[in-house]
Figure: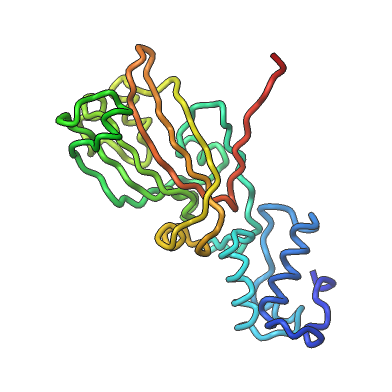
Length: 242
């Protein structure tokens, strides 16, 4: 990678941003493959002739942009773009394990409550009925990738303690795993709170996903609103000629 570092002194841009720009261009050119490990801060410092503090700031900039990802105890890697199938009903945990990564969860809300009017209308239940309200941060190998807010009628999920890292696994254990549904995806910008939780820059691109799923008899099981990192996800759908 030594050849990517030019004469930093000839540019008035802060050195760490010059370093970040050079690394970003090198990665986007395809010279470094997704998933590849970056040299250590010490090695980059020697290659670029910059201080380790400057190198650390440059790498931090690219981590904030989603170009790089830091894995505790392993180093810094070029981030992989995750292709999520838009036409297949799978869980975050299943998808994460299929990529060879370990799913994780940080719970924000895990309670039983009455639904809002909007939630009751979507689930086709009364506002006086009880739902499971589940809000969590979804992790892959410790990296936060999404925020999910799910509402499930309590008849399908009477025991909240049964929900671990996979909601669908808990529903399946009760005989209510969803088999079909509707999903809407739209582009948006991260709010300050969302950016802090997902460790991305404020106003970074995110994908907002609204999912409603059903079991075979047509009853609606789940109403979930999620925020996925736009720098890490591509939602892919197969299409066919009619």
